[in-house]
Length: 403
Image 1 (cartoon, rainbow, N blue to C red):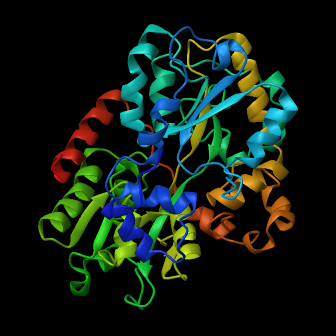
Image 2 (image 1 turned 60 degrees about the horizontal axis):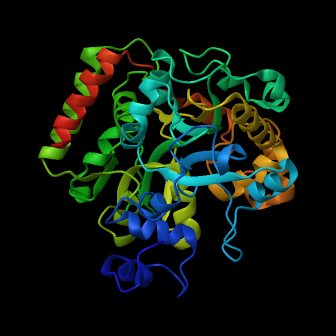
Image 3 (image 1 turned 90 degrees about the vertical axis):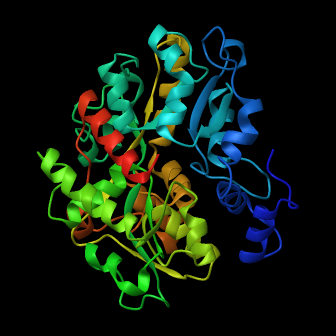
């Protein structure tokens, strides 16, 4: 289900990464350099039955669509320990499908079923909240029953209860993880670090800068670097100023690449020495590559979002209740600590940091998993766009990228 070692891309990654045996995370990153990734390629044959509805397993179990390497995984047993424990406890199956590689492309796969209110093949999906806002506005997802979610009521971090402006109180969305982004640089090659937006424009970094293809992360950090709060009441003038900065840096060759998850390979190969990056990725890369990179939340501001559980229309009431049982299980801080120790993004569950002291004390004070109060002051959300704004700004961003 993954590409074989004779593939030149994978062979190159084998040479670059320490150890002869690739673990699951490393293999996913290796394939991402040239293809959509193991989740999109290999799991297509394992996708849930898209006909009928009521979830996987003929109505007995549920199907969960998620991003790759976004749940604790045991390389030795090739299993997901926390999910296996839930399945044993709950008494029904969960088909866990790592099938999301990009919000827009995944939405394109299920948009027809969503519009018709038909079963999408997934009982729950963890899109990013800006996409979830679209689903809410189009009335394509179901409201949760909080009587089945006591752990969410008790443990959802306060800052997330009303973080999605079109879903106050999280009636339709419940955060799974909170991916944050900041600035990263090669510690040896860029000893002065990246402290301001203009530091990316230093002559010695020409062609060695990579930024993210996710508009809200890259444009949010550029806007913040230019003095605009991405979560505030900005408009065309502020967006256009940030886009002009990006356009100039691309046309001059200062920015060498704009990438999705595969930007990590630019860092590993040395093709990039500085980047706008996701925090969890850099923790993982440093673990696997001798702590070569420094990542900081810039003083001007990094970005934070939420990838959240939703239940699409077309999922049966029986399956929806099982999804709520699953969510409630993961809102136990001890369970979420197991997930956070592997995923290394910011968890949305109160008490996770305390539980982490038992799971892995080394990660309990990691500011990229558990931001300090000062860090939180410098983490912005990207305000929800209207459908018209989303189309306009996304098109403008893609045009600058040459897409």
